[in-house]
Amino acid sequence: MVNLRLFLIAFLYMIISPSNAQSLSSHQWKDRLVVIYSDDTTNSTFQNQLQELKKDTEGIHDRKIVIYQSINGKVKKGLVENENCDNSEVEFQKLNDSHLKFEVLLIGLDGGVKLRKTDLLTIQELFGTIDQMPMRISEMRRKKDN
Image (cartoon, one colour):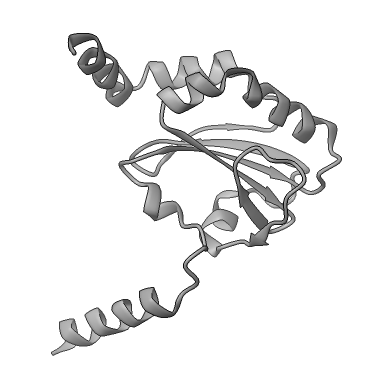
C-alpha cells in the first residue's frame, strides 16, 4: 500500500511539474553536462567560456555534451547568450558553490561531477578529460568498429 502511494505521488508530480523544466536526472546515462555558473552575464570569464565552447560544436555533439548556463539561479540550455532563463531547479543549485562569481562543472553520464573549475575550461581540457573516461573510450571503440 505504501509503495502504491509513493508511486501515485511520483506520478502526479511528473504530470503537474512544468514540461519545460530541465532536470539533471533526465540526462543520466544519455548526456554529459557542462554547467556554467555565473553571477552576471557580463562576467568576462563567463563570456570567454561561452566563446570557448562555441569553437568546436561538432566535438561537443560527438561527446554527447549538453550545455547549461546558470545565471543568478536561473537556468537556460545551450550557448545562446541573449535568451531568457527559466527558474532553476534545486538540482542545479546544489552543485554550485554559490559564493563564487564563476564556476564550470563537467557532469558525467553517471551523474557525478567529473571536473570543477573556477577559471576558463578550455575545449582541449574538456575533451581530454572526457576522452580519458572509460565510457567514452568504449564509445570511440564502437564507433571505430562500425
